[in-house]
Image (cartoon, rainbow over all chains, first blue to last red; front, side, top):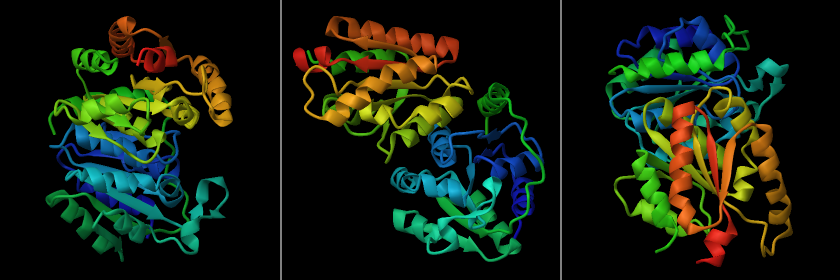
Length: 188
Length: 167
């Protein structure tokens, strides 16, 4: 599967002001390329913090669905956050992990998921019971649909190719924050 | 009256309802107090970075928060502060119990303590160390009000003069 393609499939399903947190690097570049929704937050640093940021949004606004997009390298940096998500059990939070088994942006060095680490098993082990690998694009869409309709937290893993992102996020943190906050001040 | 009541009062006055923390012995009376008070939403994640990230997300979504930690925990934060909190102008509050000075027995704590103020200064983060209980509510209230008024993070440091000498 391909990250940009899956991100577009996700974004196409978002009709109710769902918040989307794009993790550092290619993950948020593809989110940007998929259309600049004001409810998107693009993380330009703080590798590993997409899940905590998404959890904070989810706790603050239980009526709004929140999607976190992370890469394997980023998630590996903050595995404890999966336990925090399980412990706080936000019904409105979904984590999508794009796993290409590598640090693509820094030169395609192998990540731990290329060998032994299984991120869905990690999420399950942390206590996020509703965790599943998407086998293909159609099942990815089904899992997203289920997350939109039912009580989370959800964890969706997707094994992706090594394609470059389809765009590059505009790097203006203050603007990103202001736009995101203005969008989230509106009712979900 | 123990010092932690002053912190709770100032947090309530500023509508700070989310408390994230990594456990610390000195902070335990405050941690117990916020857990026992249903006005607060309390989260204890695995790392200080996570704790600050949760406050950042909540803050952008309209829920004000503070992270409680000790000196060594603050030392894990420079990258997150430099690449998320400061550039995005997020008023994340931090309350740091100061270890490594005035009678600490751990060399590691003493060394890491010396990095705290230089890091706060280098990042331009407003910070103030409280030594007396009679100043605490005023300082926490003022730091919080200024943080929200100026869209900037702030760190209140609890000196052992407050938490140990008068305890």
